Structures are given as structure tokens and as C-alpha cells.
Figure 1 (cartoon, one colour):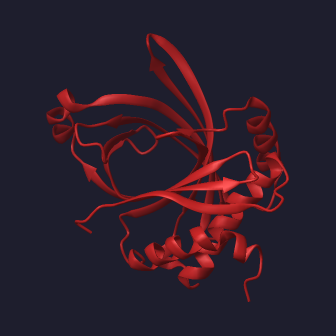
Figure 2: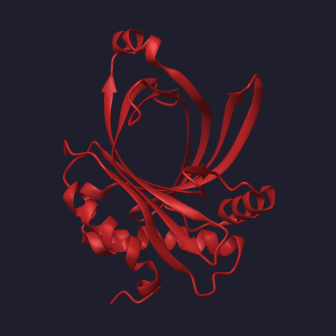
Figure 3: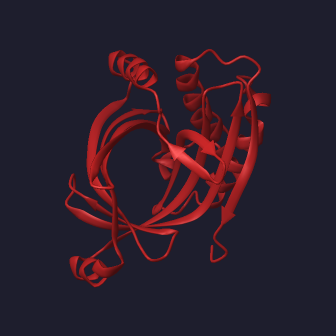
Length: 225
């Protein structure tokens, strides 16, 4: 029986579980949670604190329990459509279109962070299609991600280099991803709970959570799916 912080996590868990179940058999769907801070109408990704990033990075890298560790390098571009992105992946030398199907932003009171849950549909595209999109593309940044896998979730520590007003800015952040959901024999509630516990554990490394409270403060759902 799941009891670990279930009541605290339920406002996010109830929404995420439904979408995990909905897309369970779709191999092109990826679920992400990003740490950040909601600042008025903008969600600012990343730790925004070198101390937090270093502390979490040291602990994650020293942990021996991971099922697998790898890394990923890609450049991400926005397009003329706000919910559509292009990923030029240097690790597998492929191009992908990412479409946001769902986006939920949650406040996490009495912690240093908020978090954003996104459901992307991925599809591989050709170099020709990339060239046709050139005039629409705007580079968002170059990402280097170290991935740490455990059961159905993957913790990603990333650094993003982006040019802002002719200066290079470096964003250090963390995401949690669900992987291998099609092969996972557990039910969707268990997977969603494990997914959010991984996120909570990491936030707790930065600052002990006392009386944490999660609220959904904004949402977007793509009506075509």
C-alpha cells in the first residue's frame, strides 16, 4: 500500500496518474517534471542557486543504486507555434519534433521550488523538414543532460547554454522523466507516485520539506488529443 507523502502529493498525483494511463500504450509520449519557480506569468526553469545544484549533483553522482546512467546532448529550438519545438539530438544524430499535449504548473508551498509537469509527443523528422522550418526556428539553448535511471523514472541533471542579448547564460536544472512505461507491469498510480517521490526526495535534499502543500496554479491541454 502506498503511504509515502500520499496526501501531500495527491493534487499532482491525481492529474499525472490520469495522463500516464491515457498514454500508456503510446511509445511516442514522454512525461517530464521540471523544477523551477513561478514568477508572475513566467515559469523560470532551473535551480537558480549554485549551492542547491552542487549539493544535489554531488549526492546523485555518488549514489550507487541507479539501474543505469547515461548522458544526452541536444540543441532545442522553438517554432512559430508556441507548443511545438524541434530537438537536434547530438547523441543519436536524429531530429525530433516535440509537441506539448499537456502542461500543468504546480506551486509547492514551504519549499524553495515550484514544478511544471509536461506531456510531450515526440516524432522523428527528416533533415529536409528541418530545413523547411529554418525561418521559423529560434534557438533556445544547448543542453547537456546526465540521466540517472531507477525503476520507471529517470532523474536528469542538466546544464543549458543560451545566448541572451549577446551574452551566454548557463542554466542549471533538474528534470524527472518517466521512461519505459509501456514495459512497466505496475499500475499507473504506482508509477505516478514513484515519479513524484523522486522529485520530492530531490527537493528535500535542498531544503527539508515541512508541511509541504501542492496546488495546481495553471494548466494547458491540447484539444487534438
